[in-house]
Image (tube, rainbow, N blue to C red; front, side, top):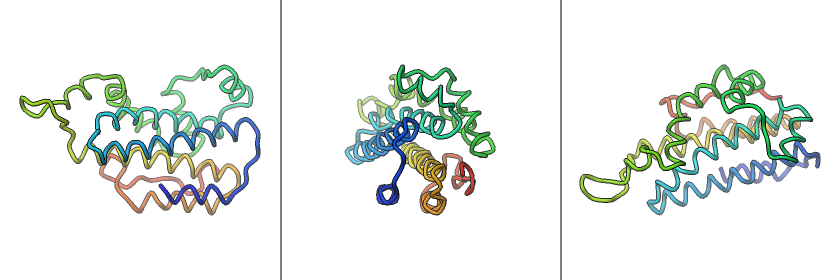
Length: 199
């Protein structure tokens, strides 16, 4: 993830509302990603997992603003902080727009209930506060791995598609190539992205 910043920094971008909104999202997403890793390193996995829903939802919103949202929809979001589409509807639009063959819808379907539980103090979160009869974190290595990999994957895709929208195809491909350098996407398979999608 640290390599993303200099790749973004070497390009100039227009100062229109759509572009600035996506840049703001990316900055915020990277900060959340760094916070998740810091919390995991300090054995505060519950708090780290609570940040995963904002990362996934924020990435979907950023990608929606980046390309499929109309100028009027972007203006409404910027001025009134409102998006008329439900989360599942955004997922479907993203799959069509970016040619991702169901990736966004499948990620939403597979994780959304759990993400809400972790963020809002549901039983996914509360049930992991005990080890036998003691109050202690009880998050498996597999759960931590899936959390950090999901956050990394969705942010890398967001940055890649943002760069490609602005004609920086080589940099977008460079970002997407990082998806092959670590982890899996939660299915036990490497995350797959369409190299030319969003161009």
